[in-house]
Length: 246
Image 1 (cartoon, rainbow, N blue to C red):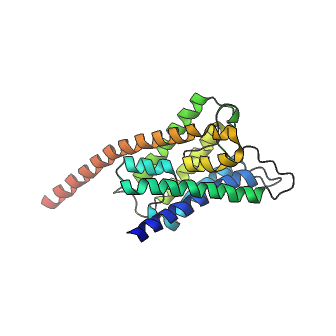
Image 2: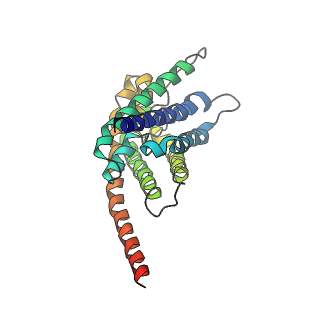
Image 3: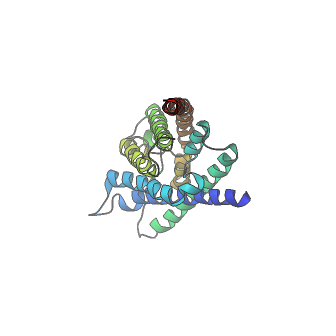
């Protein structure tokens, strides 16, 4: 039992490390690199690819959350055991912080490098597009809600087996394409925490939003999905029984 939990926690640690390092690394190191800058589309794809690759690498061990909001949302949906919630979240936050630290060490090796926001999230003056607090709260709530809706739907009974990583990765890509200008895209409290610790006190002071809004959106999606997919399972059972008695 202890070995199983250790494996699960390690999977969440490495998955969140890769998500933070790969996604934020694309923003910090490659997005504006002269001549070959990958821009907003490239950063969005980078985040989606980190989830896609780790979903197949370790998703079968821990469920592939890599995100405290996902863990809470799946718990709300009845898809994550109580005993896994806190260990998963701790592993996710540690993974994100260490990934941001490694990224800082690499990026600071360039002469004249200026960290700027270091791929952190923010609202108001710290928003890439200078969007206000209300806009940023709504964006994070809506984007995380639909992210969980996709995750739960594509991993539910009746969904195509073995392919969930693809729509989940594409959903995260789409989320970044829409919300990078507004909040620099969080939908993941751990991903927000790691870079903020290296970006400065002003970003740390805004972290509350990128914990509360994603978790709230995820919890609502989980509760709604529990109702939707319980109904789907009931309909499926009725159809099967009718077929057997026909």
